[in-house]
Image (cartoon, rainbow over all chains, first blue to last red; front, side):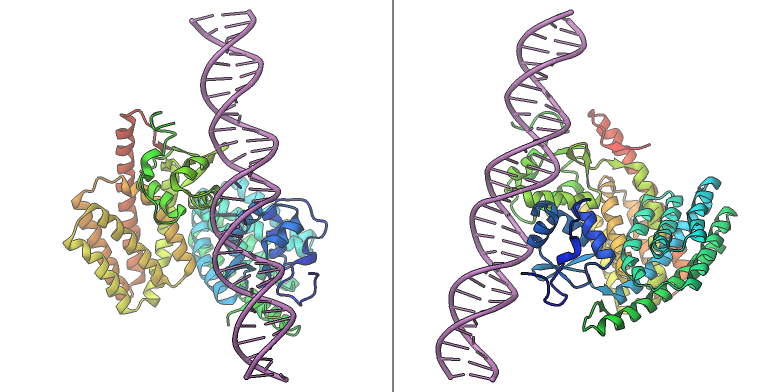
Length: 238
Length: 238
DNA sequence: TGCACCAATTTGGTATACCAAGTCAAGCGG
DNA sequence: CCGCTTGACTTGGTATACCAAATTGGTGCA
């Protein structure tokens, strides 16, 4: 029963000694940080032992994760959803429209103090440039922006989007140059929202989204090659 | 144990003899058609008897419905989600952007035969004008339009939207005049997509969306008064 | 040596048993 | 007569037992 068997089919040591957090949270973390590799089989009874919970809450968590697009049913069993490049391209097409809607509404509704609060978030990256922090800031910026729209469905949509691109973002071997570009664009977006220049901010955020998309697509392709060298196929699609 | 007790708290005869379909499907139907009134308490053990299933699949269905926004947790128990007018207004704000994105992409990607297929759907309403048929056609038109976008996230968003407005649409006391208006606008939208006139179709669909929004808001307010006359508060919000 | 078939095990799906917490009502005291 | 307390019951949450299907590994035959 122990380890081995290559990769597909073992979530073994991914949860060593972890006892904190809900089942859903733990699984989500493990999947998003690639501790559970895309394509890995997930057996309810394995998790039962590993997480110390019973199957009922585990099944519930798996259904949640399925809704998040992080777990899919492969026939009878559950597997960690493969990173699907084609799907990711659709996410970004979707994202352009969602972000555009968000910033348009933000231009109408954002309060100056809200904008300054977000600026403080992105400016943290000026002093600290850890990989993990960069990940968080990139997520938070766009989620906070969504909050400014005041529309719960746009907020939910942005949450969904950030979940679906999270693993791709995790694959990025951070290029410092790109980071400063990101900060500059984020800052520019805030300026334009503060100035209520809706059309311009839409233009900028679409450009920003496409920039991010290209970076992620590149990172994914590199990651695929890296894993293929180990005999693994982690990524679907062209 | 039988019936009575007024309204909040009885889903009693809503499932008489119904044995077909999954638990989720049956509950969803009952909620969308207002056989289960907004605000009604839902007890897992009641459903266990009524549907003849066990609690496990019932709980699963309830979680699904919660994700759909059709069921909410009221403290410890589950209740049928109240129709929230404020939320509905947010849905329509969201919908404007989603539909705009959809028709823009549809202009790029729709095949002539796709457009004709949809036209056939809405033209059914010319011969038959039953209430239920009108409901279905209105739903199908927008879902089919979403398909033309070729983007699974826009399709999913449109599905979500149609679910969230379904109960409001069910409350409409059909005004024949509005129906012909709807058909005309739907037809116009198809024409513009076929002609690839993206900007114009966006303009028209936004206008259409606002028209629908006003009708539904009116219907909801009337329905609220109607139910209040019976001593019930079915609708939340202003 | 390779293929086909069979049995044992593992899987997810379902039903049920158990628990703690919350609800409601009846009864007691003011 | 009103309000508070208390206890029985109902509720959702969790753990577990049971089932059918499907996978898998091994064995025997060609």
